[in-house]
Image: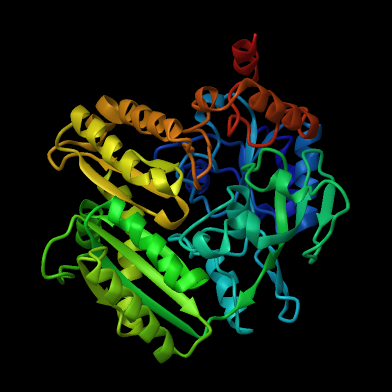
Length: 484
């Protein structure tokens, strides 16, 4: 780092929290999947909103780019410096020390937290006052609320509770010039013009740095019933979801599709060799139902619905979680699929969403086209079917190296899958964001008007282009060129 900047940043956060040694910075400049590795002048770790503001103001005045970072669990390179901008002086601003749960209002069903609070810590704090914060994703032990907001995280409970955008009432944000916008309102009705928080949610730190949030809480359900179901194919799974909605209504919390290759991969990863079903099945669904009825009454209603679904052919086999440990096993198998792919290497991560009715045809057609490219590809398909989000992640053949598979087929598979998603009136990124990996693809999937409008917002809030440069938006000149 340029020597004359170091003392000023150290004076703001303390010498121990301004890292400049390459070895110390490596964990902050390398992404979760070890695919994106950037460079930074320093990793700065503030402990308060005012320190974030002071660091941002100093960087603004000295034309130093800032990469905001939470738990660094991005799958798309969104939380580390862009390697293509290695010559741009930048710092990583890691918010992990802003980790206080400031207050909980159990009557108003709200919780005020700093951005560095982990999702798990937020959930545990809510449970401490018999409330629920419903966001649930596999990385909840390390991902942080600020990052969840910046990517508009989804997860397994979106079917009932919505995305992160639906779970927040107010924000505190540091703007690119260091000024502080304090919008920490705990109101459910505030119709006083532009709702600024939605500008920053999902912007991946390119417009402002979220430092605190007011989150919505919900009553804890009295009962939870969980089952792993075998079904004929994705079409039967969609029909099953429709049927269960009719029978159980909003009590359905999660409806997760899992392909046989996905289950095999995660069982191998977890060294879980205990068989699930007696017979092998190509498709499974993990269903969770939560209600305010007693556990025995809820189980009886759930089992009756599943029995009727079995009689009608929508369910081929069913495993009901008879204990908390059984339910945890089912959920562990689902939540560890992502890590299992990361460990295996050579997984093409396609995080798409399409209308629920289009899912069966999409999976059928996309699978056929990928297998035409490489017949031995393992079709790791899973995800939040209840809200139309499918993690369609073809995995390298067992006898092919990760590097060889990705170099030979990675871009082609991504293009085929994303093209099919768009042809189905869908999206190429349902919940993982854009980061670097999906940035340039936006030129094909978003209109010129939409991209230019996004750039107008970016230029208005961040005229120097210092916040998380190279992320989310394609190069402005390229956008202008495509619009000409």
